[in-house]
Image 1: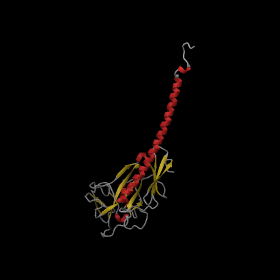
Image 2: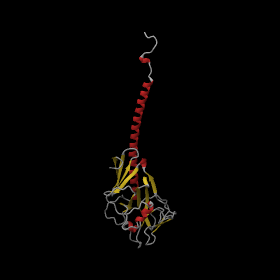
Image 3: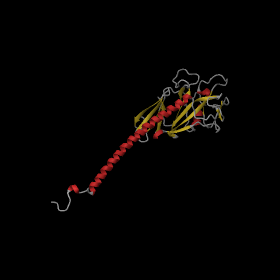
Image 4: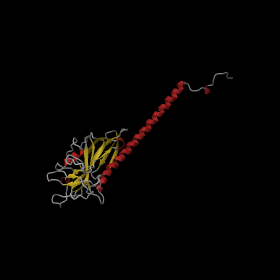
Length: 283
């Protein structure tokens, strides 16, 4: 017979027991939360990688189709014979309707202090024919390739500046880049998707029916201290310029939340692919 008191089954948890339960529960919650967060960060990284691949491929596709972001408000003057770049002016020429110049391609600029979390794209113009008014241009030097953007050689603001600065998706951060077979660099890295011109001889190109054929070209002497647009235009003053890249390029980006990186490759034929690597340096 039980006279007062309580049985073991009717007693509540002691303070110590309650604290133990809370500690275990809290630890389990932290473990689960960390696991969920880790999976989310990996998912974000993979989504960002796919988005970056698609963005780069879209730039190439738009270039092949002749698209550039402009409302048509610029005219092109081939300038003086001694002037290395085209003169860009305000005007109302429709896209592709200029008698003097044509859309040549686009330049992609990544890396360096200015492009760790972003990249820039510039549309390029070039003259159609040589001084005789008949012979089509055959290379970037003859075309006087010029960025369609306000610059030191084209300070006017009367025409539409086509520079596009794009944020890298999902926290991706630039690590390094190179031409395949060359040394890696953490500095600014620029490539151009450019018309194959009239002297196409069967080198690797990109393009389909109804679009212009493109080649992957680099820069012989990119100057990172200059604004991007001026570094592009400076290349025209060098002979030869915009060297053809046949083996492709590679760019390394690291994840913002996981111990992963991605090696983005653009082949000489302008196909964009990627490989995910462990570690943050694409090793």
